[in-house]
Length: 484
Image 1 (cartoon, rainbow, N blue to C red):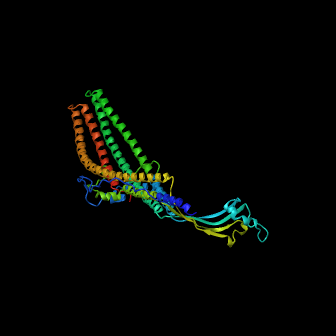
Image 2: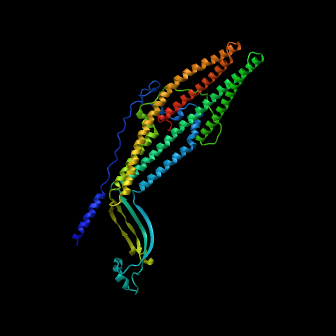
Image 3: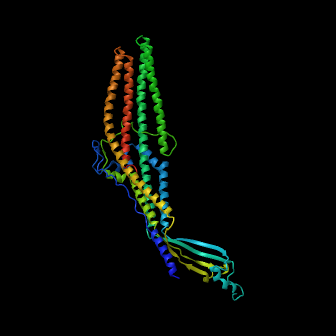
């Protein structure tokens, strides 16, 4: 009789062994080697020193006390930073979920049921004599239908023999660290954006000063040309040309004022408050710029940039997910103990003789319809490859931003020096054109052209100064500064 079941047992053993075969690990492309320096940008930066400007906390990096106060407000009240913090808390909760899967689950049970055994079932046959034979007090010992009462504890515990649950816990923990780096990345972006808007406001203030100065000059020019027209030395055409130039400058003033309002409101939103006036410090032309910047070596940037560290942690977490998905193809060992009071009558349920306990353990492995497991593995593998490309992208983006800003600081410094000379030359040209026009040695068009040129040059000088600060701020962010 036993030999008849040997082929069936052998077949089941082969199927179980086949289910134990796991899929292979994920193969990733070879990474591009990381350069040792930030290229050939050496004029304004120290590229081989291990000291980086990003090592400075934002309270020391920014010297304007008004900007520092704004940043302090943003750290406390910015909504995006609050959202990022809640993402960290959600990730921490996932760690406790994954950790709990490693421990046995114990459930308190109070249950009641009833079952009628058929005469030709195993339970019916086993209880036949008991149901029909009277006990000492003349009653049937077990009624049919038979009630069933249980009061006690049941447990289910999967022993993590292949590391599936441990890998899931590790992935959850790594994602907590990744979300913390994500919060730091939000903070670096917030520091840079608040500083950008602050220096934009300073630049707009300077634009209004330039426009106001040129408006005063143009108003004086309109008065002079009107007097000359009355004396027969100028035409109505000259008067209208000077008036048109004055009107254009006035319209530029209103445009600049509106941009001030928009920048202030945007900055207030980042600070988590409603629109109000932003207190500013010294004019942008007086604000100091460092004579040189230190970037450190690329490895320092990789250690400081939160987005690079976040991408690296996500890649490691994805690798743990793949390991857990591979382990799911292997058999699972589950223990299901129980202990409690079990009886067919409530009157004797709490009797010590009704105490029952048991332990069941077994190996279960996927044999047929493993498509969900394969799909989960394919998803995990795709997410690991995605995390790999995200990491490579973060590293390359960091190099791009650092090199671009370094070169930009150098070029804009030279541009600012040349534009300063241009503004000085054009201011002299305005004075000369006014003098020549007063003695009829130049036309009114030459005066208008000189005034327009100096206005554009001074506005360009202001924008160049603003760009210098923005490039410095973006370099500080690109090197990983602003989250401490």
